[in-house]
Amino acid sequence: MSNPTDPRQLPGADPHTGNRQVDPVTGYDTTGHDWGGITELNTAFPKIVIWALVLTFLYSVVAWILLPAWPTGRDYTRGLLGLDQGTQAVEGYRKLNDGRKDWLSRFAGDDLAALQSDSDLMATAMPAAARLFADNCAACHGTTGQGGPGFPVLSDGTWLWSGDADEIATTIRHGINADDPDTRFAEMPVFDWLEGAERTALAQFVSDLPNGPADFESPVGTLFIDNCSSCHGDTGDGGLGIGAPSLTDTVAIYGQDAETVMETLLKGRRGVMPAWSGRMSDAEINLLTLYVAHLGQPGGVAQ
Image (spheres, rainbow, N blue to C red):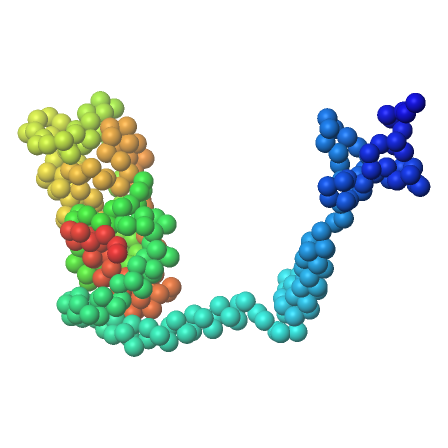
């Protein structure tokens, strides 16, 4: 009588060893494990995988020897090839700079109007100007000059000083409230001399200016004329060239809701625009100036 649990009597069992089972389909030995009729095969590890592991290991050894690999505190091994990514980056920058030197040198002059009128030159320079803007200005003013909380919009027709190219260049070169000796100054004072009710009424009045015509002959309108018009204009339109923004549009630097305006009245504002004269060349400043001036024109979003 046969014993079904005896491996020597199972199909494929080796009668000589008594414990070897061979799968009749693949010819591989089995492990003797069975899961609901599925037998586990004792297959060999694929040779292609073994060779892949060997080649990967050999490549890593060669890479460690030839390429920069091992940190040594503040430095790293250069490898037998002597590669240095810092040196390569500098060389790449020099090649890039040499490639644009001819046309960029033309921006070193002061005649920005003449540069603007040269359509071929502007077409060549604008991609580089867009990159210059993205690297230095977009973090605050947005990728398309759309501005953000605390940072002016550059893609509309409203300017703190002027949209004239020479004025924009002055702002970029010397900054606003910066540490440059020729910086521009702009500051919103604290209106702590007003009564609480007057501040509340004035905050609401200013927040309503973008919604349409305001009554400047009313008591709160008179309050605005007496306290705000010298900087923001008699109707709040700004444009006086002293760094005071317009209060009649919907893109106020810090916000135009009554709560934000109240905070401005209570605490004042003093934004800072850094001076770029020590960070960019005159040619780069002029190139960036013309790009920003272009943003403020209709349809002037960066290409």
